[in-house]
Image 1 (cartoon, rainbow, N blue to C red):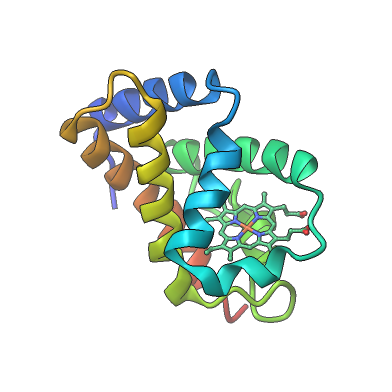
Image 2: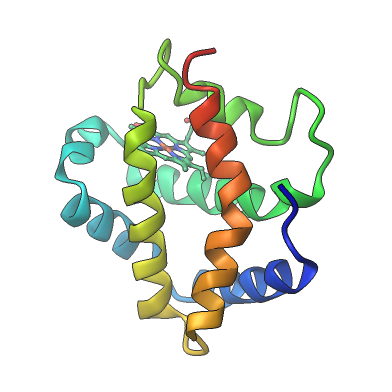
Length: 138
Ligand code: HEM
């Protein structure tokens, strides 16, 4: 699955603007828990100050994934395996809500948001999201 360079440029620039908003990650988890309440108990013991930093880095990995080598171990291998059945056990069916909560938060924080930006994000992160889902059983 190839992602066009134009999409990656649009999505990465949008992500830079989002990261400049101090409450982006707080709002992301608020949106996720509203859209997918079944995810909230999984974070019962989470240090969110730490989690926001880890997710900030990992969203960067999602946006780099399409232009990195696809040989194992990929740049998402560690994060993917952490979410797999034998560790955090995050069901692949939940990732759709993650993407929707992410794009809802982008809409709310990116002052230059357009439908084209939304579509660019979705196409850009799809390979990384599919990779994480596919590693669930590993
Ligand atoms: C609905 C989908 C997801 C759920 C329910 C979920 C849930 C979790 C939970 C419960 C943790 C552990 C938090 C803790 O240490 O207390 C975690 C850690 C993490 N998640 Fe997710 N996650 C999801 C999707 C993703 C995706 C798509 C990414 C990649 C961008 C991601 C990146 C991370 C990272 C980087 C960590 C920290 C890993 C570590 O501590 O080693 N998560 N996630």
